[in-house]
Length: 107
Image 1: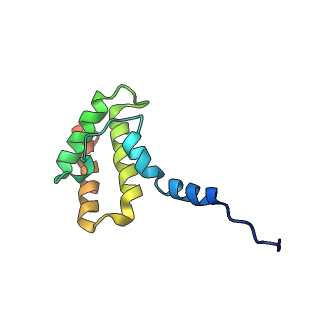
Image 2: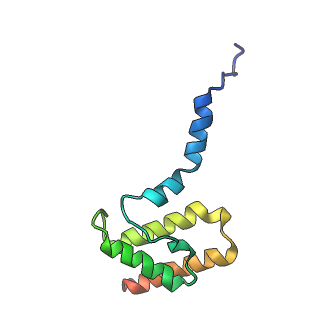
């Protein structure tokens, strides 16, 4: 075999696909919060923040305080979905961070 050339294995192809969707799996099966269906698709930043707050407050599996868990999940979603979000959608999600801070009195 020539130097620098390696055999491609079928397992790499599968691994690449599974690595690509790891963030989707985390969002759907997170052990930190059980999110409401479609939480990030709600129409207003206030509705998104309120849903995250309800989920964080109700969760007994989280490792940190509810505010931190909710904000982490929101930031995670924004960062991982970033390229695929429209400008208006991203603005709503960014405003949801401010709403979440207000709901937890973290201004």
